[in-house]
Length: 205
Image (cartoon, rainbow, N blue to C red; front, side, top):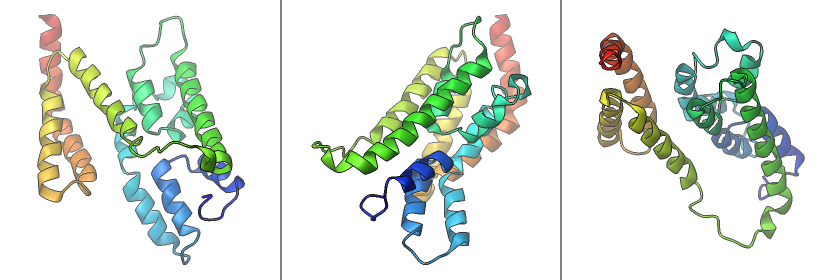
């Protein structure tokens, strides 16, 4: 935003209201391009399509039992909030809804603060941050490894890996994410009864 000539108020409100990093880059470019709201909408839907699958994974955690807090949690379900709240081992004496609420709230505060500080002082940072984006990839690798260690059966994880590899080979690295997520969702939904039976048998054993 700084490079495009916008002041600190623009990234402040964009980070506060949009709250999706990739979409903020799209909107920043759209602000200096010819007005085309429909194309921006479609691009944003495609870029943020993965959030739909995060939401499916969090249906139980973000259910009606946590009250009105769920509406804020749903609206702030970004990569970091998903990974932290999904993996959280919340002690029994803590309210799970408030725990997840404050995780999401602090993440949004950091996000907005970082966007504003970046606009004001980013040019003063003397280090090259190229490659730092790998942090998100590393985060999801850790989530996968944690789940793999906890699983009694690795069938669902192996199915996910197989579908991801197949889509990667078929459509390439630039377009494989949405087909992969759709494929995983469809296959695991169809196999859910079988996977549930296997899980119960393993627990009984």
